[in-house]
Structure formats: C-alpha cells, structure tokens
Picture 1 (cartoon, rainbow over the protein chains, first blue to last red):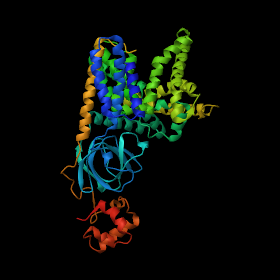
Picture 2: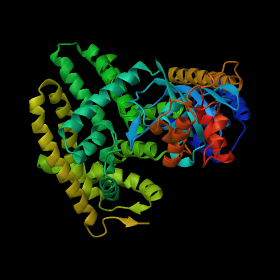
Picture 3: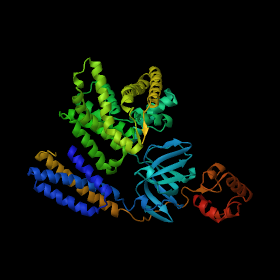
Picture 4: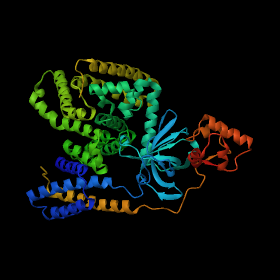
Length: 456
Length: 109
C-alpha cells in the first residue's frame, strides 16, 4: 500500500508541475491497465507496470480535479465586477457569526444575471449581514455582487458574495443538507454550548479547539505563541481525540451490554459523526479511517496493519481531493504519523529505550523519542512554510502534550458529565480552567527561553 | 517494493479500471451538464421595496448611507410614495452612476 501511495503521490506531483493533456494520460492509463492484466502473473514486469499505473492514475486524478464543469460558477464571475447575480442554492457549511455578519459556504444550483438563467455548481463564500439564525443545509435565493477569490481562500471557494441587505436573502424553507452532517453539526452546537456556558472565554476557546477543532475563538497571541513553541498541533483534532471518542463510546455501549461486533459497528458510526462535527479536516479524516480499519479488523477477525491503514487513509483523501497533497494540514498530519510509525521504532532500537529501568524513566524516554522523531520529520515542513525553526519544540512537547492530553480528557468528561449530572460538571470546569492557564503559561515560558525559536 | 499477491493485483486492477471509468463519466458530466435554462427567478425576488423599506433595510444596501437613506424616506413621505425607480433620480445625492449601482437591489411595488 505504501508503494502504491508513493507512486500515486509522485504522479500527482508530476501533474502539478507539468501541464499535460488529460486524454493523452488517459490513453496511457488505459493501455497500462490492459498490459497489467496481461502480465499479471509475471512478477518483475507486473511490479514495474503496477508502479507506472499508480503513477499515471495519480497524474489523472489531479488533471481531472482541474477540469471544472461548464456550469461551474467560476466560469461566470471575474476578479472585479459589479454585476448583480441572483443565486439559488443551499448553505454547505456551518454558518459562523462574527461582527453582525454570517459567513458560510453556499453550494450554488441556479444562477441568474443580465436577464439570463443558468444551471450552476460550485461553492461560494457568502457574507450575509443581519439575518436570523442560519443552519447548515438551509436553501436560499441570494442577490448580490460576486467576485473571484484570491488564492488565500483555498480551493473550495470559487467566488465571494456579499449580501448587504437582509431583503436580498430569501429563505426557501427547505433543507438540502446531508442528514449525517446535519446531526453532526447539531451535536457540535450542543457540545459548544456546554463548553461556553461553563468555562471562561479563553479556556472555552482552547477546549473548543482541542475537542472540536474549532480554532476561531483562540486569541491570536496564544496561537502565535504555540506556533513558535511547536505545540500548536495540540489545538488540532487528531488520532488521540478519535481514540478518546471511541473509548467513551465503547465504555457506554459495554455498560448497555451490547455484543463486541455490534459495539464496533456502532463505534464506527460515532466516529464518522465526530469526523463531520469537527469539519472533516485531513488529520481527523486520517485518524477516523485508521480507527475504522482497526475496528473493521475486529469485526472480521483480522488484525489491522498500521502502515497499510495509514496508506489507505492517505489514498482515500487523495482520491477524493488530490490537491490535498499540497496542503500543509495533509503534509504535517501524515508526516507526524509516518514519523511515529517508521522512525520512532528505529530511534527506540538505537537508544535502547526498551531496556531502561525503572518503568517511569522508560516512559519518559519513550515520550522524548516520539517527540524527537516527529520533530525531525516535521521541522523541514515548518521551516519551509512558516519560515522559522524552533529547537525548543522537543522539550516543550514533553511537558505540553501530557497537559493537553489531560485537558482533552477533562473536556470530554465535562461534556458527558454535564449531560447526565450537570452539577458535577463544575468540578471538571474548574480543573480545565487551571490546566489551560498552566498550559498557556508553560508555553510562554518555553518561547521565552534563549534560542527557543529562530526566524529564517 | 509492491509485493502484491495475485489476488491483490486483481483487486488493484479492478479498482483502477473502475477509477478510469469513473473519470470518463465525470469528464462527460462536466462537459455536457451546462447551459441556459428556461426558468427564471421572479423579477422582484430579493429586492427591497422602496415604498415599504425602513431606514435599517435601506442602510443594508451597498451604496446607501445614513444621509441618503433619510433623504429617500423624506422623499417618499413628501411624495406619498414612489411611482417608479426613476423617481430616485430626483433625490439629492443620486446621480446616474449611483442610480445604476443601487437600482439592482430595489423595486417599487
């Protein structure tokens, strides 16, 4: 699997730098597919052919993602234009309210301008002033000027629309959203309500990021300090969070006396809902797929291989969105896990950490090695994208990661306890306040150390 | 390096074949799924009625500020309502370019 992923990734990178005709590559892929089928029994020849096929498929995937439908909204709009469009569609993300304006992704379906009516597709980012509360999936007809976005907004946003008057947004009273995403966002709202009711704004912002991956309420000073110390990864929903959700679900289902196989199946559903609730970003999709393979292994009584699970998670994401290969989130997430899977065992053998006694020292040494292996792999990416190098990262993570683990566990406990025994939740809330204050101060301490970080 | 069994190779080939077929279908849909449609939205959809809008609604329209919104309301009260969008040109502060900019958001019922 790892090799298929490697050649597929090479193919995507090749297509990123060289513009080639889609049909030419498609023809090559078709010929390769037939040749592979013919030589499937020849060992060496088939190895070479399968490598080439993976490479060509990667190239095709990226080329295909560049081809937009003729009805795509980006064909109708320009970087600077005052043309007023009337667009029908539905809200395709969770609306965010900031300074009296709602911001959300809007999936366009129909479009009208200059007295002509067209079918349309693609997402636009909408800023809507003063409206009633909005929900994911709500259908609207919007009226306003749309212009093309700059690269800053990412690949999903094809246009930016500002709807300045509430009268220019007509609700159609229908809901087009996917039921699973709707349920996930409903649960996310409920969890956020619990967090923000019981905690101070700062602690709630940090916990919201750790538990639900919502980073918009973290003060920029805190975020900046964590970036410099190389501890910002704790504000991302990752495999650990997925593991905690799975553990809580397993525990609750076990109490209800549900059999092991059914329990695994229900946990998979819980994890998929959690994945959507946290925005289905690369790290959480990776962690969810890996967990699903692990649980599916239990259901079919086969042991899941962590390397294959990691490769399959990457293949799944790249098949859906090959451009993710060039996103920082994808690269950092997969390189971190790859470092733990491939480099950590080698460092462990080199430093002979298995033979360290007593056990507590061994655990500390292993924690250091995990931190060192991820730092060694990710420091190049951090230096390239963020233009700084932070030697303090390894040391900071030894203290920050356990503290973040504690906060995440307390956060999930707070949510569960608040639902069944609201009065008891206050104890967890007080502990979280303390831990978050400790985390921020500790992080600031590390960034103030001499040569903690260097700008490149 | 790519140590696949015969069965695994067949599975990979099957999946690759399906992916190639899917790409052709996706390409066809992208190329031939567009065009003008006969249906159109109602003319007044999403537009602000000049004879009913209060100051807050007028202020939401791009190009109308505090003073202009007040002048529009004053004109409406004095003339007992607007007869058409062209009446806006009688209001101080609305020249041809301003009129062209704001008329798309307004309607007179």
